Length: 116
Image 1 (spheres, helix red, strand yellow):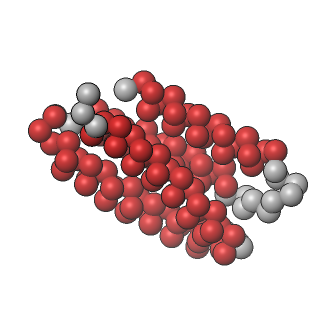
Image 2 (cartoon, helix red, strand yellow):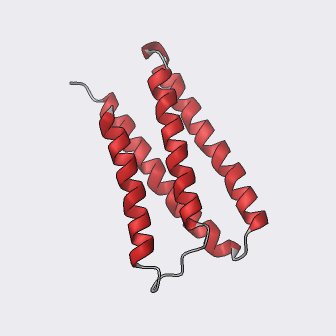
């Protein structure tokens, strides 16, 4: 259980470090840090939902978590698109971050589905 939290914080620190170290050579959108914090907070909420659910509901809760991630991300990017400039750069970086966090969630789910 704690490995999920540590890995999530590790991904956040790694992404913010990449942004800090490569800020001069790569054109990061000003809302990049906000997007990283959004996805990290979203991961915390989804892990709490996973922890809260009874064992019998694990499959249904995984589907609920996917829908929650998708809908909350769509609302978040919609708000950002209407409030920020340079939408192309914003959307590309958002999709990259979305995929990174979705791959992380899938890997964590697969490790829980393996038999001991």
